[in-house]
Length: 79
View 1: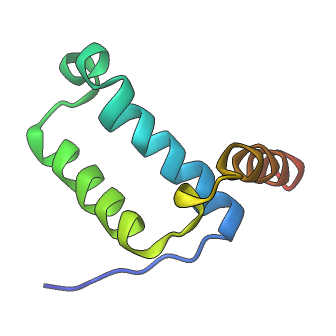
View 2 (view 1 turned 90 degrees about the horizontal axis):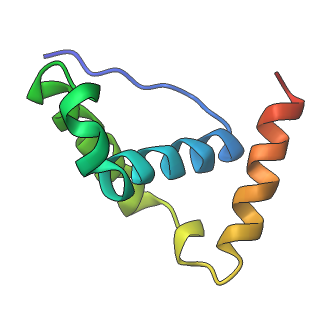
């Protein structure tokens, strides 16, 4: 099986991490039935999130909210 890698900035990673966290944790009950067409889609997002969980240190920072706000601003300003 081939493997892919993608390159995204630190800011993009943090924004994506927060998005995945919100979908898979905070909003799961509300969205699961309408968001995923097949369980494999949910599984792929869980795999990506678990990889980010292992690699990222920002979510453990006491300044996480500020880091996230800055990351969102960076992403908005670059697109």
